[in-house]
Image (cartoon, rainbow, N blue to C red):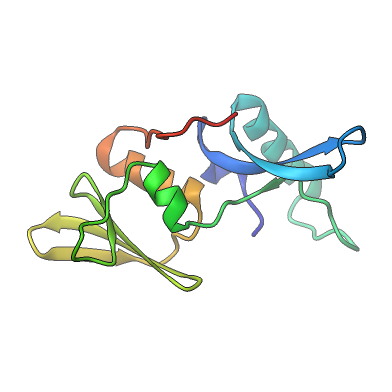
Length: 143
């Protein structure tokens, strides 16, 4: 997925490429909260590329994080004992089955609208903020 500056907000969580030749791993991705400098990086990259796709592989320093059950729990979603889905503040329902994510916005008792384009943590963060005006808080903070 090619992330655009326009879909990011300060505090969104992405995987960030760490390069350390002194570490046995040499390079790896770690979750990191986006700041204004990261958003500037995305905007400058878009302006430089002007929509052109470069020839050959491009090393991405940022990757979106797929929605998983572990991430949902860390973001404060709860799974009732008799359900497969996860809920947050009676606003959002998320179901993760295999590699497929289903997201619904709950708007009254027993009624929901499915949102089809939410597959990554930063998208879920943005949806939650749009609905509630609040940030999704991590139970376990990032390093």
